[in-house]
Image (cartoon, rainbow, N blue to C red; front, side):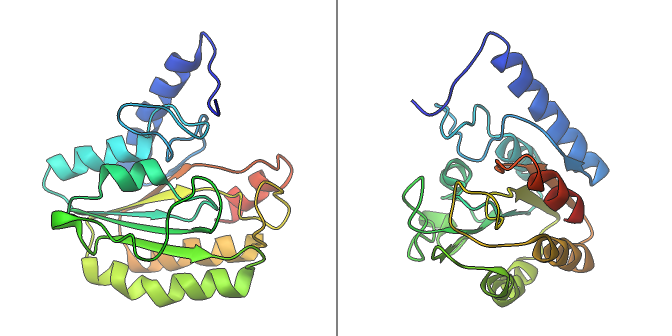
Length: 210
């Protein structure tokens, strides 16, 4: 079992969904726990109880809007991807270490049905640093722009950081800053939610730079 709970977990996770909605409305960054991108509609997973970014994205789709979900957490947001795997109203784009938890997220996983071509997985080998991470963002950004989203939702996880030992990626704060700047330059409505990140010294610094 990888997702522990307490008597207060439901209340805290529910509040997180509310914070996520507010972040979307205010175009801000919600620093929240627990994270959400591994959670499925019918089950918790990977420390995640409710998939807040998926809830917000679906509410926007229900209003007729197109949503780009950009997940730069070091792990694939498998719950988020699965939820939108069969729709063309959400473009899911993930950079993540591969192989690593949850075990999927290879380049041939591109969606099904109406969603075919609307899941973009960019698997990176352990040891990938700023140059590779940033190059991957630059190479795939034109696809995100071509999609012309009404809203950009960012799953901002920082476990790809050089000093986060849960994974083997080697990204530094300067790259997170550059990614944030690129998104804000290209899209008018951007908001972000905190996902992974387990080095309590460096994660706050990386969050601020992004």
